[in-house]
Image 1 (cartoon, rainbow, N blue to C red):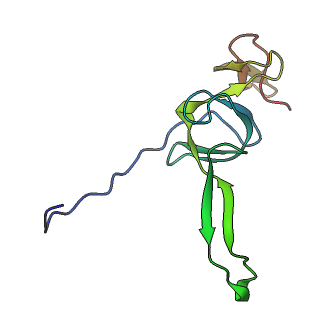
Image 2 (cartoon, rainbow, N blue to C red; image 1 turned 90 degrees about the vertical axis):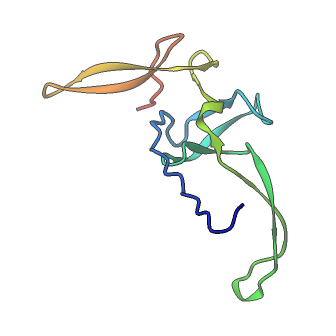
Length: 126
């Protein structure tokens, strides 16, 4: 990089993510394609999701006796992009896109619920 040239940090706009914690998702692209796992956390700022046992990375940690940290190589999950995931429908057991159905709640209010595009069953278990 040339001297004196400043680079601007890219500010990402938040992505509208339709996944929720504890959803079961299937990886459709990348090195872990075909794997399924449970959503551990969702980061709406970066558009990435932490999925259980998917995108495993190795971290080399130095031992620190004061903090009771054993050294060695630890494996942990790293976030995966939302575009590489599809939700698994619990009724038809397939990776599907998410549809939204509008239900009338008591008091004249409406609620949007997530539904399966293939079988039409609701994805939220409440």
